[in-house]
Image (cartoon, rainbow, N blue to C red; front, side, top):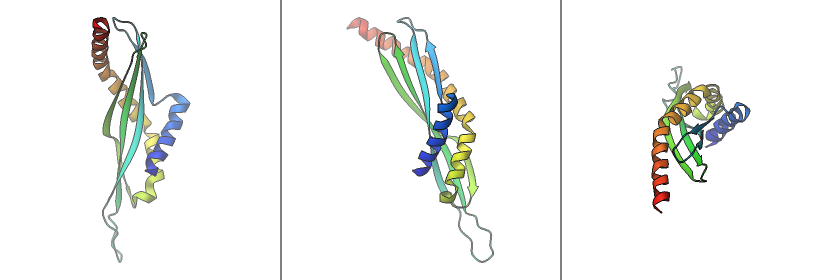
Length: 148
C-alpha cells in the first residue's frame, strides 16, 4: 500500500508540474460542445519470487512489479450534464528487480515516475478510443431529455 502512495506522490508531482497525467479535449456534439477531462491514476503491484540461497549459492530472489493505470473520464456538456466513466488496464509498465520487494519499493516508484511517458501514451489512447462511446452516451442522454 505504501508503494501506491509513493508512486502516486511521485507521479502526482509530475502531473502538477506539467499536466502529464491529464488530457483535455472538446468534442463537438449535435446538442452542443462537450468539455472532456481524462486523468490517470497509477497503482503498483509487487510479487516476490524466488528464494534466498544458503551457503555460497546465488540467490534467485526477485521482485516482479507492474504499474496498473486507471483512466477516469469526466465529460461536461454545456447543458450541465456530466458523464463519468473509468477504465483500468494492468501492466502498462512492468519490471523486475533483484532482492526483496520491500527493499525495492522506492526504486520501483522512481522507475515508474521516470517512465510516465508510457502512462501518458496509454491515457491518450484510451481517450481516443472513448470518443465514440462518449458520443453514443451523449446521444442517449439527449434523446432521453427530449422525450422527457
